[in-house]
Length: 502
Ligand SMILES: Nc1ncnc2c1ncn2[C@@H]1O[C@H](COP(=O)(O)OP(=O)(O)O)[C@@H](O)[C@H]1O
Ligand SMILES: [Mg+2]
Picture 1 (tube, rainbow, N blue to C red):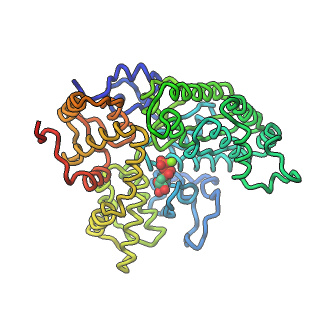
Picture 2 (cartoon, protein in one colour):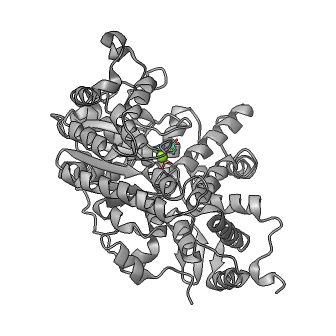
Picture 3 (cartoon, rainbow, N blue to C red):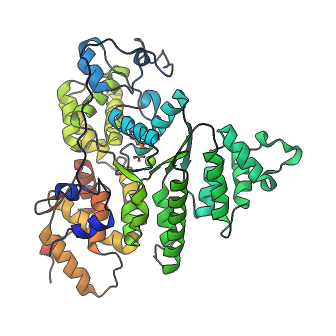
């Protein structure tokens, strides 16, 4: 028996899915449409819109003529390579846009096109790949263009549909025409002493809106909020981040148990969202995203059909080339000398260049050089920073978030299986063989525990969320960093399954 998922079943579940996982694409079940390369004239004069930044960059940080840093670096470097150097400010702890945002031109263009076509999107990628940043940057650009009104909603803290609707309503406040309608609909709840609603804090307004929505009327109130959005004179782009976290919470509650009642409530919410999104598709375009995949969550409850109206868009890691350009741009901004070979070494260490990891590497390196009063890096610096800072306790903090998300999606039992499978791979040079998977399946079956998360679902989640990729004889860690982290944290006292006494 193979450890991989039943591909036929998956193809039936997700007939329109174009990025269900590398295995399925590789198996030829889903074909990626070929991208038409954008023609460009080498060394053509820069269009005026590109030479005039949308935002004025702080000149004290940019001693040379400021250019927007989110231009298509590849094209610019190809056309003007020797004449210009892109600059980029370091990311903080959060998502980035504007002068901290790099690359992703193709994805921005794709998303923009979908918005213009009224197509709803489900943005998928593993954590820290830059989903929120991509959406924020798109919304920023759309706002600048002035053709669309944009609303960004984060549902990480939402517990139920009523919370979600209150959050959407409050985040629509900056769109005045929409907010006026919401205000008049919720007039009873928003009535304030003296009627000075603009002086009431956002958090207070949200509490009042939320008081007007309950388990019995959320669909009706939600319809009203969407009707207000749809009545805006400009079409609205509604970005909903962390929807899968709410769906997962609805399905499993605080005890991570999937019950029939919870499944029915989740079904009802997703069916409503689907119906509403279809009804207003010309006026309100949805972009859904989240730090856990929606499909693995839905698959566990057999609710996958609800995802069919959202066109998936998979955000990939940066290529080594793009990452190297990003590092060069950061180095330029902070006056560091990062020769080609040091940038190549950073990419080699990471193997899979998740933008956050590239940024984090630069930050550690910057701190290291600063402490040593140097501004030029060597290959030895790169290796030292990787081993000491990235793999050290401080660097591993990020891994806790990864583990937390896995626990959230898979529950205690599924997480235990995932922990074993990933550690097995980490101590075996990154490889999880089909044979090891077979042994785990047998061990789980003979343990007599009522394991509600089958090993196939665990593997699907691990593949979907970017931990593992399919290889001819099993799976392999995608990111070298994640593999090394995992080994450093869990590998020490671990015995591979075939070495265990029977
Ligand atoms: N386009 C980008 N340009 C520069 N840095 C990026 C970009 N996308 C992501 N990052 C880096 O990754 C981090 C995480 O980005 P975020 O958008 O929050 O990812 P996600 O939503 O996928 O978890 C950011 O803080 C930043 O360091
Ligand atoms: Mg995010």
